[in-house]
Image (tube, rainbow, N blue to C red; front, side, top):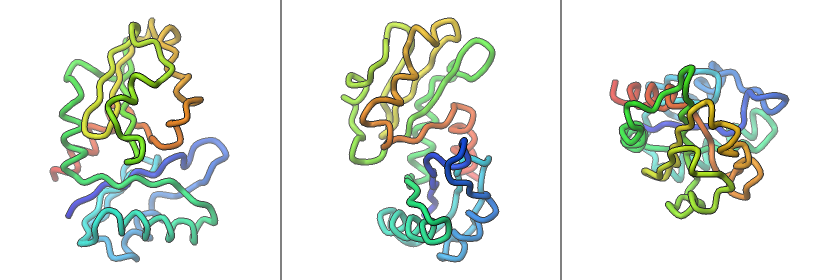
Length: 177
């Protein structure tokens, strides 16, 4: 089966630094095939015969042993990634006028009701839930009004990992290759 691993909180600020070449090597060492990384933000696509739960445990232990720190990881199937990307309206982009992000949710918070719990002002943005992900689009002039940055203070924040729409679409495209 083809999977995508999304590492949370790496290569940002002073947090854990994980070179993508090293991630690729580690995934291959645990038996993953056809490993391809994308960007420096902890995205890798690979094939494995193991179930997602086993992979999560195995990858987590391997990364902790190698880097001395527990790194939150989320495993999605390639079909999940494709479905999430298809759920992003075509006109939602990242450009000079708007921002579109996807928060991929860990299973213990994956629930459409999460949107109602977030400390944001929905009248200044468009937001939707699809396939265990929250997808939002904010026009640049409404960014501060939306209070989107308050998500970082919410109890669910440590159980999500975000990517912009360009990355989400590219990962989905790579899943189809």
